[in-house]
Length: 137
Image 1 (cartoon, rainbow, N blue to C red):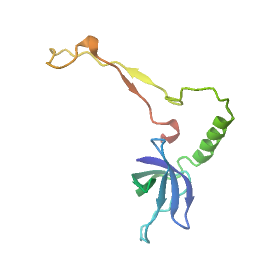
Image 2 (cartoon, rainbow, N blue to C red):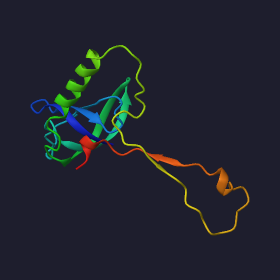
Image 3 (cartoon, helix red, strand yellow):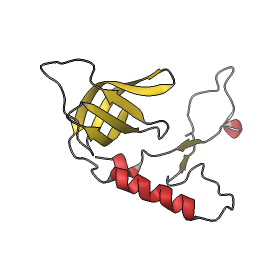
Image 4 (cartoon, rainbow, N blue to C red):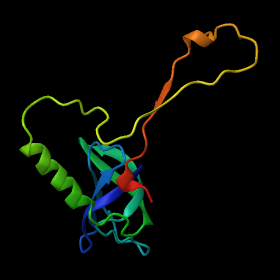
């Protein structure tokens, strides 16, 4: 999983990570004293293993991919949340909010039709949702 550190306590080796899937935040706590301990800073782009312990998403095996990649992400998320609270209560479709959606058609193939495959008229298209712009390097 990829994420960005939105809060860090370097003295206690703890951090909160905003995850690429935009679901639960991941919590990181260094379990023991190690010689090559990592020091996470707010805004660091990190890669980690995600697991749930007692209903809480935990981050393990954390490695810094790019230091200080998004130092203002926490403020951006807070501002976005405040903006949502100030909006009127009218329903809004947020399924693809903030994402560009590209629809791609499945290309024709010259080979003869294989048993069990759909004919050209039955083919569907695929939607590709890009990775959030804030996390691009």
